[in-house]
Image 1 (spheres, rainbow, N blue to C red):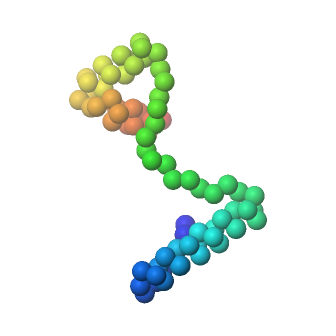
Image 2: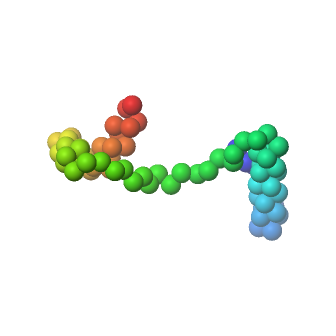
Image 3: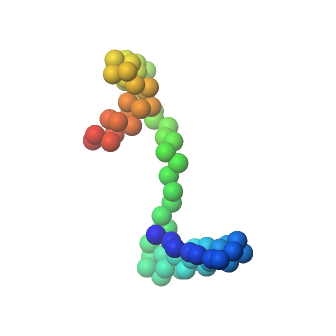
Length: 76
């Protein structure tokens, strides 16, 4: 987690950039890749039959296909 603070916008930007630089240096020193944020968007490739079955199951549960997939992954 990266923390930063400032009493005005200029200090806030400087603190943010300094914290990021420190985090990236730490990652380099420890040989760890920096964490990357995830957008929440995924492209899933499936056969047409699996796509159809998933869409039908989602509809039967009163959910969008995206919500059904997300709920199914979360349950796994």
